[in-house]
Structures are given as C-alpha cells and as structure tokens.
Length: 99
Length: 423
Ligand SMILES: Cc1cc2nc3c(=O)[nH]c(=O)nc-3n(C[C@H](O)[C@H](O)[C@H](O)COP(=O)(O)OP(=O)(O)OC[C@H]3O[C@@H](n4cnc5c(N)ncnc54)[C@H](O)[C@@H]3O)c2cc1C
Image (cartoon, rainbow over all chains, first blue to last red; front, side, top):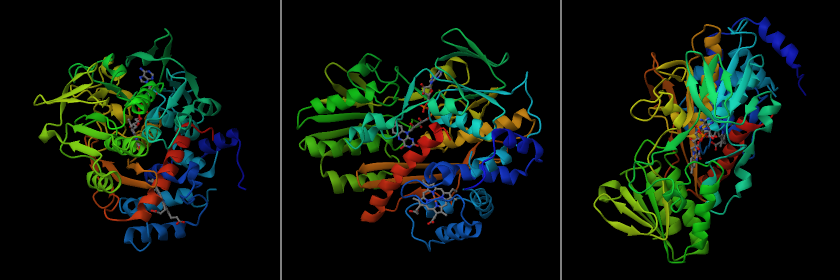
C-alpha cells in the first residue's frame, strides 16, 4: 500500500517542484497512451497485464523483446516499434514505482 | 490519486503560477464524449487547482464503439451507456446544456439555456454532424426510416436499426451506404457489416448484406474480407465505388438506394452512413474551413484561426490520423497539457499520438490496426511512424483472433474508465 497524499499536500508538492524537462512531460503523455488498454493508471485490465509498480529495467527489457520480435505478441510488437528508445524509457519511468 | 497520476501531475504541471483571469484558471470543455470527457477527467487529475467545466446536453453518453456489438447480439445497450457522476465526483462542474455560440475575444461560451460561461482556455470536442445535403432524399426525416446509427445521442438510431433487422424477413436484403473519406471511424462500417452478418447467420441465415461503398479501399480490408469469406460465405456483397458503389440518392419510403450510374437497389433494411462534417458548433463559430473540418496546430490542437480554443476528436482535420475514440482520448491529453502550458506561458509538450482500433468480426474473432503519429516542427502536419503500427497479421491464426477479441474488450473497459471513472 503506497501512501496517498491528500489533495493539499499534493498541491503543495506541485508548487514546490521546479519545472521538469520536456522529456519527462512527453514521457508522461506517452504513458497516458498505454492506459487505453492497460487499465486506469496502468493497473491492468482483464487479460492485459499491469504495468504499474513494476521494475523499470524489466519493463524496458519486455519492450525491447517486443520490438525485436523475440516475445510473442498480438499487438505489443507493433506498438513497441513505433516509439523511440527514449520515449519508451520515459514512459516506463512513469509506471515503475507507481502502484 | 495514484502514483502514476501524481507523477503525470508533476510532469505536466510543474507550474508555480498559472496565469488566471481572476482567482482560479478556468478550463471549459464543450462536449462530454471521447475527447471531452477524457479532457475534463485528465485536467482534474493533473491540475487540481484549475476549475473545469464540462458542457454536454445529454444526461448520459452512449458510446459509438461497441454499438456494432449490440447489433451482433453480443452486448446490451446499458453496457455501453455511461453517466457523468464520476466526473462530478472528481470536481468537474457538469452543465447539462448545449453550447450555441463562442465569443473568442471575450472568451465566453453561450449556452442554449441563456447562461454564459467564461474561460481562460477552451477545449472543443463536439464530434460530427451528418451532411443532410450530400445524398439526395436523405434528410432527418428519411433517417427515421433508414437509420444512420452513426451518432449515438440517446441511442434511438441504434435501436431503430436493431428493430428493423429483427422485423426483416429471412431471405431479405440489408443495404448499407458507406461514405467516402474522411469520416468517423474508418473500420466502423465494416465491423458493422460483420456484426450484422453474425446476427443474421444465427437468426435469418438466408438473408444477404449489400454494402454499397463510395470508396475502392477500406481500413483492414484484407483482414475483413478474409474473415467474411471464412465465416459468412456468400452472405456479404461489397460493391466498391469504381463498380457503381456510390449511393447518390435514396427513396426512404420505397427503401431504395440509388447509385451513381442510376442503379436502384431495393432493400429490406437500409443503413445509410452519410458524408460528415464537424459538429454544428464548430461550423457556426467559424472554426471549420471549407472542408467542413477544423484546421489545427498539431502540437497543441489549437484551432488555426482561434488561439486559445483547442479542437480535438472527430471535429478537427486529423491528417493521417483516423477519426477514432482512441485519438480523441489521446489528443485530449495533449490539448489539456498544451492549455496548461499556455496558461503559464510555456510551449506545448512534444506530442506523440497513439491510436488502436480493434474490430470484432465475430465473438471470438478480433482484428486491430495501430498507428503512432508525431507533429512536425511547426505543427502544420502530423506524420505517421513507419517502424511501428500496422494491422494484425493475415492468415489462419485462430489464437491471435481469439486473443484480440478479448483484448478489444479490455481496451473498451480501459478507455471508458479513462473517460468516466471517479478515480
Ligand atoms: C459504429 C462506430 C464504431 C466505432 N468504434 C470505434 C472503436 O472501436 N474504437 C475507436 O477508437 N473509435 C470508434 N468509433 C469512433 C468514435 O466513436 C469517435 O471517433 C469518437 O466518439 C470521437 O470523439 P469526439 O469527442 O470527437 O465525439 P463524441 O464522442 O461524439 O462526443 C461529442 C459530444 O459532444 C456533444 N456535443 C455536440 N455538440 C455540442 C454542443 N454544441 N454543446 C455541447 N455538447 C455538444 C455530444 O452530445 C457528444 O456527447 C466508432 C464510431 C462508430 C460510429
């Protein structure tokens, strides 16, 4: 169970941080595209596996395997090949460590 | 709020000071469908200090996606119907009214009920209008006899088509008129043909489907046609535009579809999907150009002729992107991020847009198409990625088809949660 901050602490947190670089923002948006099948916040949906809270290196390796065609897929091969390594890395960052 | 959303919030809104007219910055969203509901929800989750108002005349939203599965007998209407309570719980002010005018200078939306709503940024996702002037004889009255079922609204069109199929004699003919590009949901008519065929095969096995198309080619065509041959034998006849497939006139009472060369097809049920444009509010407020769609800057989805107004979903000129629910959902997030960036004087984030359209051709038979798109440097065009994307493989692949049918359902649950869920 992760700690869920109240809206007030969240807002305070937001105001306290410095602007993130554009890559992180794009990564957040790439990750948003994944939610269209991987469920709210990447928690998984029916037969589609969860991404949230998983090890970043593991997710990157899975994406690489989809890209190489070494992992069986109905669709992730076509998806993984469409993103740059940097985009995948940034998106994976958003899932890794979240729960 | 989950960790992911929190992180997205951090990334998207590392904003010490949002420009605001008076107090809270105000984001107004017109249209509570795929683009609008996604935008309103995403804005609340990532920028809780921004006031979000959603303007939508319908009390409930019926999705066009999975409407074809209702025709196929795979789904009930209530499983594709959603309310706005989740968004209200998230703090969205939902106003049940229709936007009837936009004043981009005063930054005000006028509502049918007389009220006006002021905004700092406006997101417009009103969907499509049907062009009642495009097919002779096909007007709103004719649509009560020959349903389009292409705008869900209160569901009456889909129910009408379903009732007509049920009432049709076995051995009858279902005619479809399919429009030229661009139109809402490129694979949609062909999924509809498949789902009607599935239903007929079980209930009226001697019936036929006559699909009259204005085009020579269509989305996922080889996959659809392979499946039609394998599953539905000679039930489906598809007539392309170059073989006199384009319907130019209808006689709704006589149930006749007339094509370019004057061939009159008498059918028992007619589903006429007419050519389309952006919804009325986009036309009336001068945002659309002569194509009938709204030109946008693809980095932010701001209307070319109206800065501060982001037009997303089917109403814009999507370039190579399809007019799909997934693109509406995905571009909603880019529009929100761009609107928030603009409020703090920053440029839009770098865009990467994602689409998948799953189609069911039978209960255990799904196929898909994927596209990944990026805007060019000045936002004047959108370019499809060539390394990724594409359609499901062809061939006799029952496992792939069965798995994709299940994954399609996961897509539907995921995307509708991303529009309407309260967390
Ligand atoms: C049969 C069919 C199957 C489909 N299947 C798929 C699929 O499998 N996958 C997929 O991705 N897409 C699919 N689509 C496409 C998808 O439905 C559209 O692309 C999507 O709905 C577009 O979103 P939108 O926000 O632009 O419009 P909509 O979702 O139509 O939402 C527009 C909303 O705006 C409201 N509105 C209109 N005018 C005003 C106004 N003046 N003021 C206030 N509100 C207003 C409307 O009431 C409506 O609720 C399908 C479409 C059809 C017809």
